[in-house]
Amino acid sequence: AHCVDAETGKELWQTEISNRFNDEWGAGPRSTPFSDGEKVYVQSCDGEFRCLDFKTGKSVWGFNFANYGVKFLGSRAREGTASRRGNSGSGILDGDAVIVPVGSTDGATLVCLDKNDGTLRWKSGNDEAAYSSVAIADIAGARQVIFFNAEGLTGTDRITGKQLWRVPLVTNAKRHTMTPVIDGNRIFVNSHTLGTICFEVVNDGGRFSAVEKWRNREMRINLATPVLVKGFLYSHGPGKEFVCMDARTGETKWMEQGFGERLSSTLAAGDLLFVLADSGEGVLVRPNGEKYEEVVRTQLVGRNWNFPALANGKLLVRDQRELVCYEAN
Image (cartoon, rainbow, N blue to C red; front, side, top):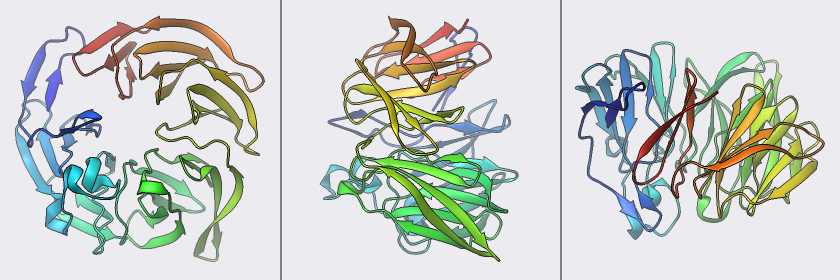
């Protein structure tokens, strides 16, 4: 784990977390660090989770997913879950708790811990983890942890850890990579097998369920997470194109070719969309549900499968060789 000054690029500290892991898709780790400004939380491909002091990088507490019965097998595994390609899904902070996608089939798909000392609050679920990150939102009258695991989509009570509802979603290689997109009581997910699906969570006197509202089977989006802007979903499509879907109906509004080979990542940035292709090309797109509007396109970094970050007027992008900061004017 590395901490770099955002103004100068100077490294402030680095901390060894675990062994290096890489396969034919590149080197890990593949999850995103997250922080509350006092502590930073990091995770390796082999399931080593650490809470570090934000200023010094020193370890405060940590655990390995093996504590909950999860074995990391690497390329020896026969299925495409996290045990093979790496624990890529990121956890999330909520109040004084951190929720981690451990993926144990022995009652610990999700684990909730005290963010300060790592004390176990609750554990829940019996599904493997895939590569999706955790989301939290107030949905249908309850604060819920939403997780797209290797076996399906689930909603878990944030405070108690009780699983409120579950929708089985089985795909080839269990390769669920996107983070659920939440809009009120609706949740959007996508996969390379099932297409893009919209569910609405219903609370019937305390009994929760998720009802399918629409499904766009042609939008078999593999690795990308769509961005929702003013009623439209924007994302890398099933091929080499950028796509727009109507979030109310699932209708494909338009498709534009020329976005990398397998993946592009999208951020909503003010009145624009910033798209980083796996070729390292950056594209600014004006969100428009009726037609594709490109503003500018330029080469920013080398080949990558990385999400960009935008904060305080700075755009941070990286490839396998370097981290680069651009002024986002």
